[in-house]
Length: 169
Image: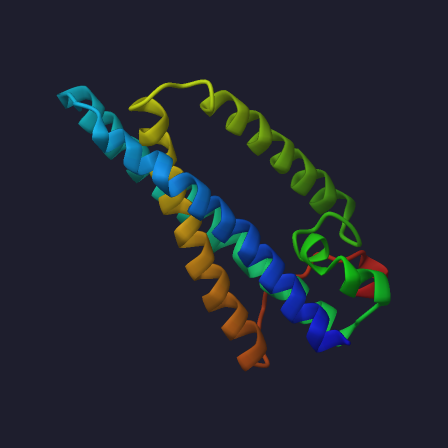
């Protein structure tokens, strides 16, 4: 049951990220159907660089992906029916996590939803410019999630915390 939970958790998170890449890629490509002026190209370069660093490297590679992999490994070793059933949400830290992790995960998700709604209000090429940066960050996230997951399950000394309540870690 634990191995299934870990696999389901990682697959669910990957499908969520992959779905966003699939849905946003055509919108990002749509920016290039417009006549882009120099300031559009400058904005594109800045957004892509910023999102690669902030979302891809800092958000996913340094925080989200190692934690998701650690929680998947924890789930494999400590399976509970409800945790396995809701494994993607477990791996993202929505429940059975430290209070700080739960608040951070829920707040971050709420913030992302607000940003999504705001970006939808933009017209092309601006929406596509922002979506290009988001797609890059999400692809970076998928790659880092895959790499950290391999590391978590292939090595005995995976040093990232699953951030579960203290009495159970």
